[in-house]
Image (cartoon, rainbow, N blue to C red):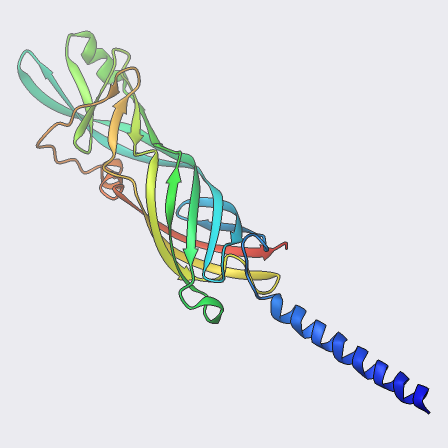
Length: 254
């Protein structure tokens, strides 16, 4: 009789301990400590196609490192060409192509002010690399013939003038800072509570005023008083603050 009672008590105690352990494990699955979870993500947006890896620091802070690749995008436009000869100023047009393509890296820290109760976050960090934002090329046989007579020309991009060489070619580009601070906000967890999640982010890179360079000549000096209206110049007007809009899919691997 005593053995029977002891055996039943042991079974009940074992069952209670198992349930308690299972409940504790379930509760701990949502506890984030330093590096005790790892997640990866793939996203698409104005920074291009992005890949990153993330780890938690606390339930309020999560860190990530990533890479973003902007595939080659061409902007075909007609630029104003200004020239001079023996003190006489004149202008013309040239078809030019701006090729936008870059690879950037980022390190960011996400703060979830409401902990596990909300997926709202604010984020800060920096991006680096990809300072050479766009290359600019163009050619004109007509201008090559004009330059052979002693005239000089340059295409007007923003507040700059890229010279046309003796072969009628233009070769240069636009660059911004290599190191760019970043701030943003959004919804969605870097480390999903479940295996998969979705995340939306809106932010801005502060990359400074863009500068224009000519191949073989380096950075160019600004030309005051220009009023250019080509697509590349319009693009430059928005480069000081680069908008970031990204939608990503998250997967927790630990």
